[in-house]
Amino acid sequence: MLSTRKSLTTAAAAGAIIALLGAAPAHAEVRTGWIGGSPPIDGTVYLHTSTIDNGGVPIGSSRIYTSFGNVVNPGTMGAKARLFREGALCSATDYRFNAFLTNSQNTATTRDCGAGWYNSHGFVAVLGSNGAINEYVTFPTDPLQYPPGTAAEPSAAAFADESGVNSRGQTYGGAAEINNDSELPDLVAAFGSNLQQGYVKASDLRADPSNAEQSPSIRVVPLMSREGEEIGKFEIGS
Image (tube, rainbow, N blue to C red):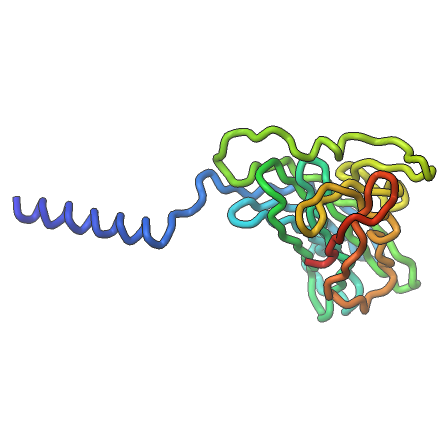
């Protein structure tokens, strides 16, 4: 009996410690999109994918890697990540290229844009020996709910589903299913720095992949209204 009581006391104490430290989020998941591939570039085939993780603050990442694990020179592989909440851009990075000999390059972006459904969808690029840039879109991941395990929330990002042309002749809409930066509307639905709903100019999202030395520092760009007037800020690179 004493041994049983001691076991129960020990179990209760352990449970209390776990409660104090905080248990892992319920139903936290990581999902990876389909794997895409390139034709041979200088004899190497490159694979790429995107991933969404809702185990903490949502993280979206884009990864490119050599199909057989061979290493490539610095500045050869680049990736830029984009994280979406229900179709609206939550966070994004510019291209980041490998700084060392390696067989893979991963770029991630993270941000809490409120409760809802998140997914990841980015771009990768390969710099060929002839100086040509080969760019590929990563397949979008399936969405994950954040916080995990919570009840469904009414969509706060329905504005990302709306598209059209404003009075200035600028197109607006979402970018979650855009396969090339050249296809972006002039104004891309996004959450500003204070979660204000607005739009980012497509020209501010288009980072030149040929610049393998781009700094990974944060860029702050204007958040626009649907009519193209500045109403806030959006950070690229966080």
